[in-house]
Amino acid sequence: MPSKRLSVTVTRRLPDAVEARMRELFEVTLREDDTPMTSAELIAAMQSCDVLVPTVTDDINAKVLGQAGDRLKLIANYGAGVDHIDVQTARQRGVLVSNTPGVVTEDTADMTMALILSVTRRIPEGLALMQTGDWDGWAPTAMLGGRIAGRRLGILGMGRIGQAVARRAHAFGMQIHYNNRRRLRPEVEEDLGATWWESLDQMVARMDIISINCPHTPATFHLMNARRLKLMKPDAVIVNTARGEVIDENALTRMLRAGEIAGAGLDVYEHDTGVNPRLRELKNVVLLPHMGSATLEGRIEMGEKVLLNVKTFDDGHRPPDLVIPAML
Image (cartoon, rainbow, N blue to C red; front, side, top):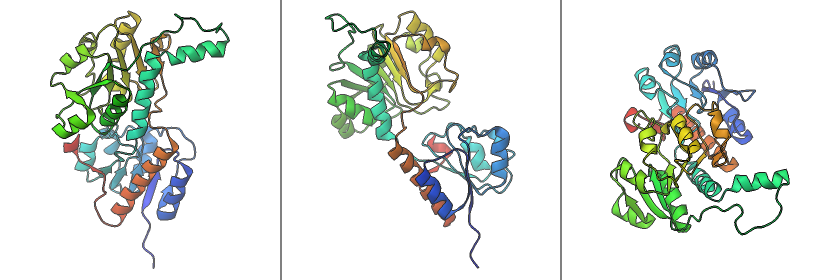
């Protein structure tokens, strides 16, 4: 008699190929619409499945986990970031947590460079001019932006994505600088042409462009606070494709409006969809809807990682992408 299949609940719509494979391997409950689950729905899902497959839009905090019951054994996150999951509480309750690291590295680095170019070369302003039909021809002083070759790029967080950004920026002729919890090995620094700054304050004060590429943790919340933002040069630009909570969004908005920072390119926001409305009014700001990792290839690869983690767990082994609190 065949053994009972693992019960898996997915909280959001995933690419068709991933959902089809889920159906083949597990007893899966898929999300029919593409809205985030409420806390009550998350609790009900965790009480009725062996494995939960959530995304960044699911707030799996201690209160929610406290009502999960005893059936849930694995949270196989669809995404690399796990700041929306209380990993410590999950482990204390005997629930493993896995993620999908490395999959979105190249896509997010591409979007970081796109934002750098968009802000410095005023691409959205040019698009808007064409769409309104107000363009009346080329002029020597029209739509002047800035050249990125030769500019100092300060990367905050030199993990996989930060290093991928460094490789791209180096090809554009930029000078690469970085601040990280740990200094890279000399051979990696040499390969990237990167200069390490032990002091984040000193780096921020000297850069032309700051790129946020670190995860959101208690230690990085508002790492770019009002005091540190004021260290930036008035002609400097900041881009963020990591987590919105790393920047004090209200302070950033005030400084952009006052002309104390030249521009910003943001793909993530401190309060998710609750974007500061004053940011939308600024011509020197490029806003994107959290699409840094939004490629079909990347989304399918994320799903394949989830499938591998769940299948490995189902076979009685440790998921290859297990997250432990000490990693955070």
